[in-house]
Amino acid sequence: MEIEYRRLKEKDLDIFIDMRIRQLREEGATEDIDLRPNLKDYYKRHLADGTFVSWLAVNGEKIIGTSGMSFVEKPPYFSCPTGKIGLLSSMFTDKNYRRKGIAKELLSRVVADAKAYGCGCVQITASNMGVLLYTNFGFVKNGNFMQYNF
Image (tube, rainbow, N blue to C red; front, side, top):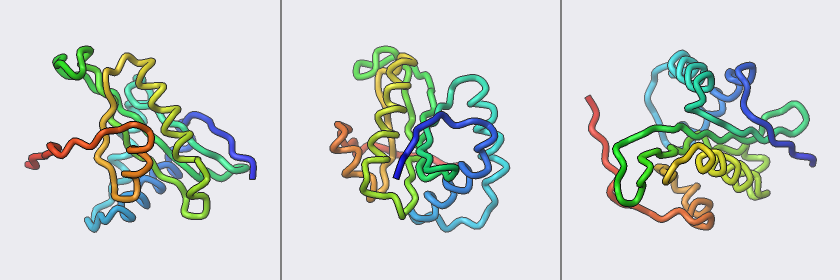
């Protein structure tokens, strides 16, 4: 099995979005709305302006793993003096390819991108499945994540 790693391109978006939706469903999402148009709009805009990056794992022509990093900026604070934050998302590996180091390699690449962008930290809301990957990489759990919805 020869796995290659390459950056996400606009031509990959339909497959990337399908994998993102599979990931959300695996993590327990049950909402019955079509996210595809909103996801496509988001990825096209943020790929173009450089505030979203992604690495893909590819076996032949088949995309088997995805990663994503969105860059946001907040007022600087002590644990993130640049104010630039990488928001990790879209970490997904096809079930047939799990436990082979693919997610770790994808994670290494997008974290390196965040560092190069000038981010002071990377954040993720980890699924139960991802906690071990992130902990082994050096992420520290922060139980204060909260969200307000309109």
